[in-house]
Length: 370
Image (cartoon, rainbow, N blue to C red):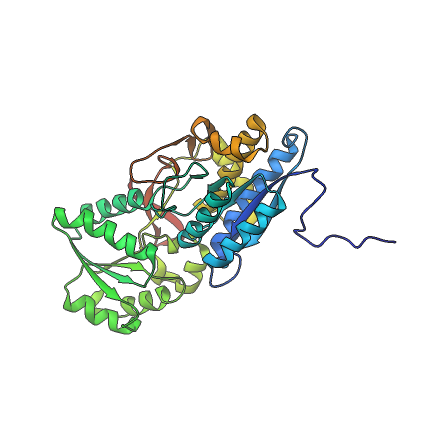
């Protein structure tokens, strides 16, 4: 009897490979472009690990699940991946989704290296099962707040939607800016159409508007409305969550999408490793890699090192977080306990505030570094 070929992405079940479960948003309403970049970084690193002999002569394999930005779907995927026997869990871009995944991983005793999510409270209680590469939101967004003040902005409007992540961001900004003379005005986008944002900005005499909302809706319509209002030609639009990082932003907004500062997690100059990986990622993605692609690569670099040193035992992997010392694409990766953070944390990856150059939207300008 002929055995039909395995479908793309099918998992081996014969135990010949060392498997890592991967959570990524690959369909709407997830941020699909972020998921694609994250997966590209993960896959590139796995290919390099396997080209170098794998894990004790066993190939490393990714078992990928699409979270679609749905916390319940992510939690169910963690349960499934645990049953499949993965050695560890990796990935996820959306903070609220990563929080649900981290809770299940902690409950199941499955080590989880979170690649991209930044929410400070990734788990309710301190855990040894979860580590994170991305900087905590409080760290990155305080650097963004520093940038706002240095650029002369003290009356800052934030367009917000209901979300633990957006609420946390608004609180971080307010707590940093208020003692330094800044004012944060919240605009609830459940109650305001994008066109009405312009009147609110004028009425509140805001000099900056931050997009604490989803992409592409309602972020793109808000930008278009503000850019077309002659009363607001001097206002700065900002996006600390990083919406302008991806090419889709420039495609949807064109010139309107430039000069919108956002956070990204890259050094001012890449190391030789980082430069080599950037070239390989560009070929894989057919476009310039985002910082999220580097996060994916670094995730596998760390897990491969841990698995080589300690084997695929889940408990030993979790115990190894404080002993990690791996050269990543953006610096030496080590994990520590950081005040206010419940997981093992890389403190910190480089943080930049950048924007797209209006004269050349494909080029990024570094405005501030932390």
